[in-house]
Length: 160
Image (tube, rainbow, N blue to C red):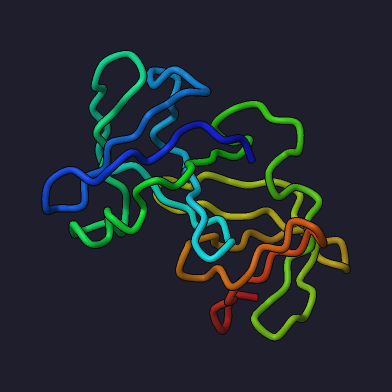
């Protein structure tokens, strides 16, 4: 993942954030793609609900799931990352990572992603050669081990 911004501070009581975009121009931001902010060492995806430029390098933003001053203050000072769906990067996001379910069972290898409006899905090649789409949402994320290249998600019953 590529670092694209920094959360500077909260703004107001409704969860808005002020971000500084040092690695990219705010005009280049693809507002349909998720950004990631680490929480307990794991990249948590957020989607933009609103985005208002403030000068050349800053923006006032609202992210999904950030609804209060407390939520916003918890993110203050954290780095903001984007995967290859937003910017070209060398490591290809989660491509090539192993996807495991909540029990540690291997589902398959991540071969890409599909941005279905409002629902980011991972394209996964199963051991039998089928390609399936698995929803990727912060509520489903259990662990992302970059060293082992393993992504563990809660897979809803009946999905597979």
